[in-house]
Length: 316
Image (cartoon, rainbow, N blue to C red; front, top):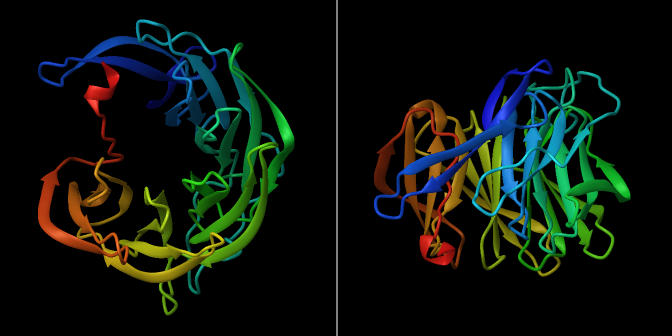
């Protein structure tokens, strides 16, 4: 995703496709297409492998781009623009003394992803404090409103990212300005979300400003990890028998402003992108307790935003 707003009369951003050279891992440009809105900030591949889903932050829109047989991207088959009530406000559930305020000046689509079945596509809009649910037409690449088209979060909390539990029945969202995690029950038959629990991403005694970033669920479904920027930590939560979260601890990210993090394919290590420290810090994961232990290893990377692992053996 090329987070710009300079292309065409509509001032859109763009998305580029690359081929991977299997000999040396280098990227080779295939093509670039318009993203369907300004400032594309998030892309994900539909489970069918036939479509790329795009969230345009500054345009407040989401788009569906076909992935062609040769890996190139086609023009958008559908674009949806978020709409709803705006109104800048302090986060409802922010910690005491917080001055966290991001983007409630307009609509801001921040993440889009299909559910595990691929029948529904969900996206969050930080500016509207809403999570949208769409039915997905896999033949046409079109989106249509779900049975419950949207659910609302507390005003000002700013939903940023989300993650499904491996069982497909629980859905967790993280709120950038409210510094919370919200547990939803997810009905895979209808795409309906029902909120059940809200918990802070921060230690009980914390006061001040914080901006949440990433959320991950461990592959075994036992733990949830939440990124805290300014507090510069990853909050660790155990998952109960009914999906409820319990705060079990935190780990300093050994850097500044952790924008994103991810597990390696084995699940033994977690790699954290400390955006303002220009490094990626490596942690060992304790699978019994969920704890993180810094390994002492850093990778120097300028302004790291996200890290993704790719198993080339599975793409042959």
